[in-house]
Length: 227
Image (cartoon, rainbow, N blue to C red):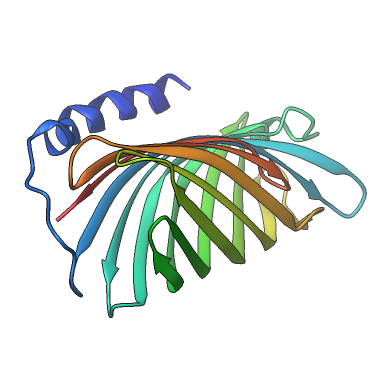
């Protein structure tokens, strides 16, 4: 975990000026960009052929979202993660680290004060690696999801947001070195939900915090700046 928090510190030094510089209030036509950094932790359960394991992920990521049209937005996301599976019988697989990358499309269904409603769908690829006592482990998994997002403006700076969706996760655990094996796994549950608050610092920068439940239990904290 020390590598994870060291990475957070370095990235904060780079991006903090983006969030504290004063910005002018503005409308956002097509072409608007939203850059964000996320820190999150979640737990999920993966079903292997003969056992079910709890997987805990600590994630540091970035996302770039662009408004492609008045109602359609596209996102690219990437980041670093630490993954732990204390119940995995293979020591090299109990603590792994790696990266993820993905895409997302969002359609705004309703965008009128104080309510907004959107439908999103996306794909994420994740890969982590672990090494111990001559054994190498590589975990790969693929997430596809669809979710509905609701936002309610409470005042000029504070917004309540909630979402619910379904996620399918399939992957494999590859073992090489002193022993070789290939195990497939999938997420046991697919439904998830979240609720949280966003606070606008000015016209283009805001902070967001969410609690997540269902198949992805945990929390998410993010910093955003629009350009």
